[in-house]
Image: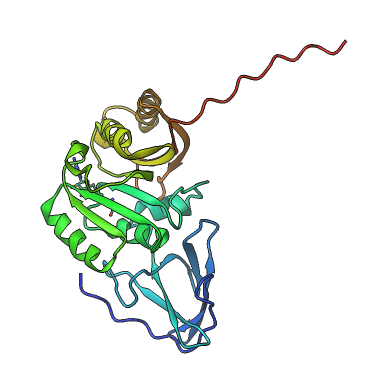
Length: 272
Ligand SMILES: C[S@@+](CC[C@H](N)C(=O)[O-])C[C@H]1O[C@@H](n2cnc3c(N)ncnc32)[C@H](O)[C@@H]1O
């Protein structure tokens, strides 16, 4: 997608690491770090989530760019992250406890599409992290490949996530798998990829659209069944985040993989 013209800021004051102050359309905007590392909040007339852009001056899918100018003249650019276009941002708005996708993380992203969310994950993990982005469709994949040309931490892989053996030479061990494939057997796909690439005690995030899995059952019943499948595949679901406010019958499940069993608690002898 063509780069959108950068919005000019008239003054600044950020240190390049922890947000800063800019002026947009004559109005002050303050950028502050979110409690999730690598995510920021732009506070102007309205609040907006954003990530610090890996590629200054580039809008990936038409999102707004906010630029903060440091005292030394260098600029830090933030990209507004719209929860209606990228459901992972929705999970943050819905106050997910732990995102697991953090600066420096190695992430395997299944169902990358054109790279809308991948681009923000790339911003979050930053230059020390990596995003292996798997997408089946050549059409979406071509946008993903174009985006990755400028984002050196994104490795685009146009392949079928049902066959991780086909891309095992390209992908290292990862800290997190993010799965957004929208397939009734998505837990199986996630499990196969985890067995190849996910570190023990690594983490997963899976997006579940209940009516795409079973349109005849209530969403909560579908989530319950998917959670049971996750347990059967050595995942330990820790948190379910409903995205009802953004999209009906859609939730994310976050959790761990091959987590250590808690040590048995010794029975206490009654104090006599
Ligand atoms: C819901 S969209 C993903 C949206 C994307 N995660 C985002 O937030 O920008 C699901 C994507 O999964 C892809 N997909 C479906 N089956 C797949 C498979 N077996 N392997 C890899 N990708 C697949 C589809 O082509 C589609 O682009």
